[in-house]
Amino acid sequence: ATLTLLVGILLALGALLRLGFLANFISEPVLIGFKAGIGLVIIVDQLPKLFGIHYPKGTFGQNLLSLVQGLPGTLFPTLAVGLLTVGLLAGMERFTPRLPAPLVAVGAGIAAMALLGLGAAGVETVGQIPRGLPGLQWPDLSLAAALWPAALGIAVMSFTETAAVGRAFVAPGEPTPKPNRELLATGIATAGGAVLGAMPAGGGMSQTAVNRLSGARSHLAGLVTAGATLLTMLFLAPFISLMPQATLAAVVIVYSVGLIKPAEFRSVLAVRRTEFIWALAAMAGVIALGTLKGILVAIIVSMVALAQQVSNPPVYVLGRKRGTNAFRPLSPDHQQDDETFPGLLMLRLTGRLFFANAERVSDRIRPLIEETRPRVVALDLSGIFDLEYTA
Image (tube, rainbow, N blue to C red; front, side, top):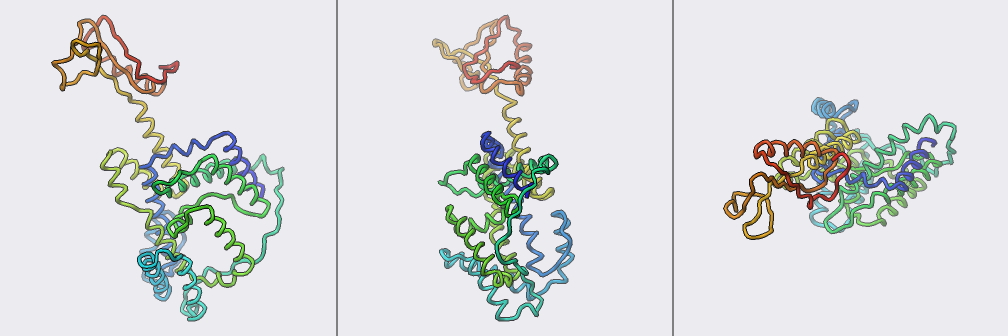
């Protein structure tokens, strides 16, 4: 309770300090790779439930190897339930898209479990769900000094994943989530949940995928989810406990497949190969290191990409268009029309000039000076919108 309360306070404090801008440090290509990596991780994580096999969870590679090794032990009744659920979801998506396919699939799975006695055939269910409302748990503030470093780490990961998931599912024409508002909302929810024994809140990729792709479009979906959860705690727990694990896995897998979009990778590659590599790096980071560390990889890749772009501003050698006062970069296209002057080197710098790129710009200017040996170097800084002390 104390740890969760501290996480909520730190998230709300981040909102007051307007730290939501940090969410913008994930570029679109990196987000595409992040989504694809998350989709693969979720699918591999859920496949054992679909086949009815068990093994200790490990890294993505270990899970994939264990899955292949465990296939001979597949429980075919469980696999049949899972495949029928996949077929039902796909069919409803195609022919009755307005109906809540996941809800129908879950209802069908519970009904089949109850009416056909699938438990006797080895089909596992989600198991007992506690009934009733939770009791109050008061935080012990004497633990704050020992727990705040862990709370800070959890708060950073909670916000980062929430922001990344929120951006990942924005459809064209929809407003993007406001990061500071997300910070504040997540903080208040987490702090309020602390006294009820809740874990720290945050956006989840697989839950969002199911929610979004099953038709959720507004805040009403969150209220419906909360109401359904409350009804389950009070009345529906015995029914929900009959849901087959294979049904739950099938729902998550079907909607996680939608996160992997090769067309988006192709569109990035068509614009810039470097950004395509960033997308692949983000996907590999999630697969190799897991979801939370993969988010950090995505942010680091975006930061490196940003540093690469801002550290190399262009330096243009200028000439004057004959008979005018127009100065423009020298180019083979108008080499005969532009004139230069002996002893004078005219250069134009553009963009932001600051400590991270000033030395690089100097390194690009020096060879030009050594090549032309001018008496005067004239710098056109009209394209510089920021010049700080180091520069």
